[in-house]
Image 1 (cartoon, rainbow, N blue to C red):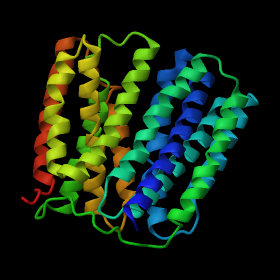
Image 2 (image 1 turned 180 degrees about the vertical axis):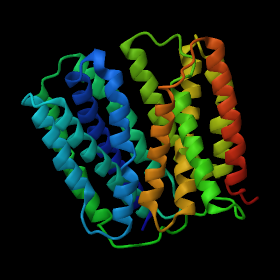
Image 3 (image 1 turned 90 degrees about the vertical axis):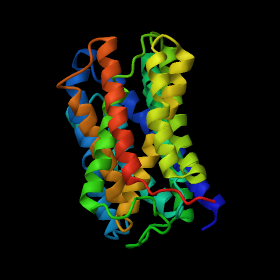
Length: 346
């Protein structure tokens, strides 16, 4: 498959992911009262993230069902039920099921369509950051639900176009994903990489950002997160996975710490820090080439573990935030240095 075609798959599912998160976070923001948002957050994250490994396993085993289309139907149903005033529990259950299925279809499509390349999958994932904040902003602004429904229905177009690029297939090993260091037990590498994902998720809430006070600043923050995720895939393909890993962990540190009160500096650090996403996904697919859906599911399990840890401890001061960010960044850098394949000298 040509590089142009693989990037086309990445951009199609970027649009899908963007629209998915608009619908998802519009519903969550408009439908869930502020005083119960935290109680809903952990169950939602569990139901949205953890089962993705199961969906991925089913897809990896060769089921010839397009989870994107099934997920689209469920996501649309949740929006219609929310609009009709149905109780929050069934709405959120259907929402999380549809959200997770679309994620897995996007991962399978972009990974299978781009052998040896990480950028298309990274582009797909990055779309979620832009959609998440836009969904919230539209809900805060009182956007009518029928407008969101129109945006939601548009999702069907890129899903169908992507089927032509990467049709649903049976079991197939992902080719060209050779990013992990040899000699490390597979289980140890999977656990270590999943830990890095969890650390990134946890750190994301601990980055010092006293400058973050307005809606436009929140929009900028999420946009730079999205840009960083996509850039991580591009740099992994251009520079190599180990160099990108070190840039996104150690290189981001000074910008994250010293950007506490400086928005421009902080956003640069956030973008670099977000590049780790592409690195960890590439590592897990490299270790599990016949199970790309499971590999992607492991990254979402890591995201849940990182956000779940926040229920037990959150930094209360600038100093605590710095200690957490520096410590976890250093540990993650060491793990990735040891687990990532060393680039060949040219």
